[in-house]
Image 1: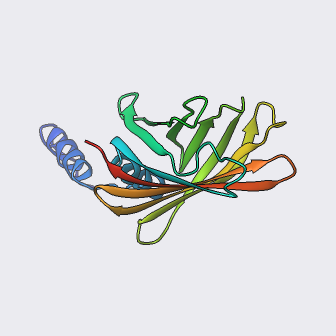
Image 2 (image 1 turned 180 degrees about the vertical axis):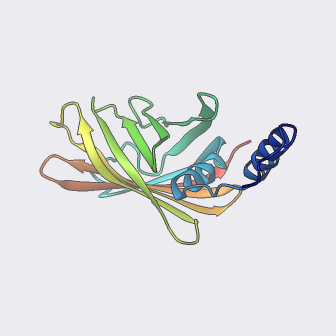
Image 3 (image 1 turned 135 degrees about the vertical axis):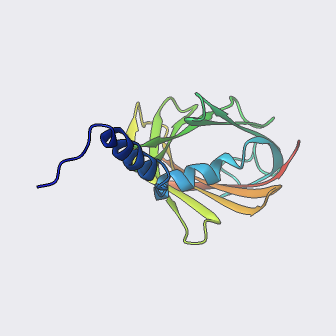
Length: 179
């Protein structure tokens, strides 16, 4: 049996470590989706269309302002929206949770629905589906969200709010980059 000389052991260890350090580790689908969402960082504004219109007549056709910013050393995205027709500015946090991208919406209805992301194969659409709800549900809750990337300066957001009795109210935001 052949033995290694003492001086060659550190060289072997260095060679092995160099090999491992240059190996590229593929990002998870959730990380790729999160990175795609980070491209929306900035100020956005646009119009709001709601269905049925009579339920949220105070928002119908109003101008919406959306701010998306990366926070917590790049580990979360803060999404804040406000409009003259809204009584408050709800916020949404997007973050990685192991192998999935989650969204928690801090709603003016006093609850916090969580949703999990699913990206389309082309990465152009990211759909968030309902996972669970914390807090009261007497006024309903946010249930679904879809972000569609048009180009670097244009995207849409489609949010579904479930009213009591499981009646959906849809809000479509057509947003362009304001900065």
